[in-house]
Amino acid sequence: MSDDATQPGPDTPLVRREDDDRIAVLTLDSPHNRNALSRRLVAELTGHLDDLAADEGIHGVLLRSSHRVFCAGADLKEAATVDMVEAARGIIGVQRRLAVLPVPVVIRLDGPVRAGGLGLVASADVVVCRDDVTFALTEVRLGLAAAVISIPLRHRLTARAAADWFLTGRAVTAAEARAGGLVTQVVDEAGIDEAVAAVLDDLRAGARQGLTAAKRLLGADLVAAFDADGEAMARLSGELFHSAVAQERMAAALSRGGAATPSRHG
Image (spheres, one colour):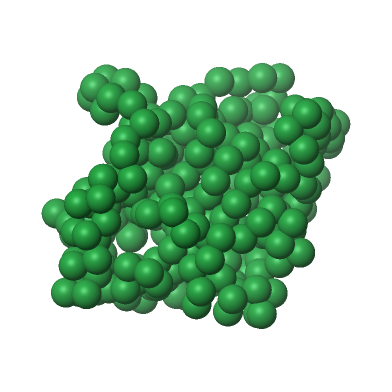
């Protein structure tokens, strides 16, 4: 899988924040690797979420991508060289921050989501998705498992959908994602702006006290699962990434030009 753009410089943010009438808009902006979950992107997203946790002026957060792909999953170039247990802990941390953020998190999906990107989607509260978006848990094809993202995915998905997606690695349609519990709304390209705006207007209409109380009630089980299983899943993920089978398959993917989780088959 080839890169989409030149790699950004150290001073170019990979995650940008803009505020719009009590809604904080976070935009993933790493087109060179299709918003792969590099250490740098994860660190920047973590920093923004920590800032938002202390911002009492917002009623919600919108997370989106600056370009077609929402998130391509793991950054395979990094996975070949860094401690993937520590990297997995970072991804667990981002997911947990989305779940414990005092206000609701809305995700807008205009394009494909792969592997680790599904963990971000599952950790959010409301997901508005174009009808041509596809999803896939491609980990199994690299000798991996969707370990760190299994915590929010098992919280959202039906058991049968989870077994299908985790074991086959196939591409899943937006309609299937909605039926399986991952997506809230599916709309066409012409309607997604209006659909997202309607959700955000509803959040603006709510009293912040009510929003925060409702989110705590709804997210308590998911947060408890992160606390109970996060470290074990991070260790499992790291062990699989560092295994000979995964290293061989990731090297083969990189030799074909891939920087992030492969997308040809989902």
